[in-house]
Image (cartoon, rainbow, N blue to C red):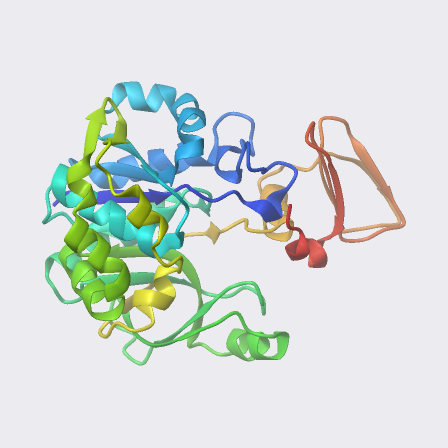
Amino acid sequence: MSTDIIILAGGIGSRLWPVSSPEQPKQFFKPFGNESMLQTTVKRGLKIAGDGKILIVTNQSMVELMQEDLHDLLKNNPNILILPEPARKNTTAAILFSVYVLNRLSNPDFPALVMPSDHFIELSNFIKDMQIAKELINSRKKEIILFGIKPTEPDTNFGYIKADKHNSSSSFCEILAFKEKPNYETALEYYESSQYFWNAGIFFFSKKKIIEEAQTHTPEINSFFAEKHPEDEVELDGNLIKLTKNFPSQDFLQLKSSPIDKEIMEKAEGLAMIEASFNWSDAGTWKEMSEFLKSSGVNNIEKEIKGSGNFALSSAPVTFCGVEDLIVVVTNEGILVTNKDSSHLIQK
């Protein structure tokens, strides 16, 4: 069975300034100079979708930039669609809006894979893990699946999943609990345990099941879609899904802004987690971004003198002298100098 893909592409990546800004967000960043993170994500989705749709949900202000960035991919594939929200309302509204639209424009029986537009993901094992998830959903053994990343350090910037790993022969784990971003001492406990995983923010589910859970756990948000039927007030213009003049935009603006983890995933029962076999980085701060780029051979350091652990992203070579763990980023937007362990504080 084919799969519908929902790509979340409405964020602005404020912690990745200066390569990310409201005018040119992180998903359009080209870390290796050839293709944007969004292009890479769409190509990844094409490997999974089959006859399913790839729906990119974003903000109205990003539509033209997105059409330009994805020009070659859009002209060759009518199943890649751009869905603009009237306003940013976090992932619950974005995902439910996408699901209701897909139930109209695609096959309601296709499962849906939700993934962010700006993560680094190793493709071959990702495809294998998605196949496992699809088989679980098609067999109805599990209908909502999350993906856990084994921690490589006691990181305080991620939410965690506590999973039951007692049945090592199973392809999935039962989810025991969700944990908010911890302090360092708690993160260290999680890191030293075999039960805790970073929440990758990637979901695979039956569209029917996620609507049922939304009806139960977040009725105030779901009722807008179930009663107002905004999916009936959209029309296709090539690859762009346009909102008609009758679209209930004012009601959409009143929706609660909340992540789907809090609204549905933490409350639903019978969820499963697959321990990811693929290499992954959310590149959410310059610490993560620099570590991934360095591992991929990107680092514009000319020389390090009595220093170590430094990173530079610049069109000109950079020399570091007598310093450690510094990150320097130079773009036309501005210049950033930060210690890597403070990079999560950046908000621009």
